[in-house]
Image (spheres, rainbow, N blue to C red):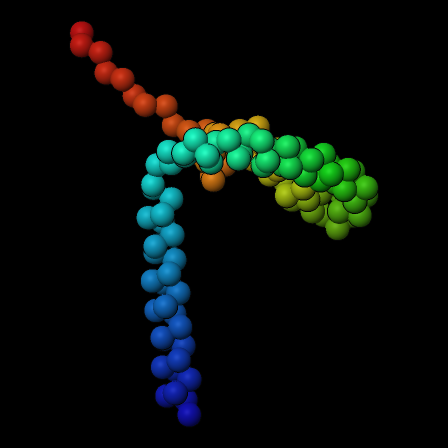
Length: 110
């Protein structure tokens, strides 16, 4: 019985390690969104994310006394306000990851 549980745990750990190793490689891919993705992002998603930021700010203000008493006011602000605001204003148009798209480096001959 113990051998069966041990084999199951080892197989589960191996599967988790294989699954999580592929996530690191997926983040290294540079995004180049299509015109359709940019259009859908500008017309549909950005207004929805702006509304989410506004509603999240209101929820944060209402829940601030309770989250301050619970000791997680910073975490609540990060999830309810900062996360949607970054996705609305900092994410490149059509990209799925939050953050600025890296600028290409140009070399000049001296």
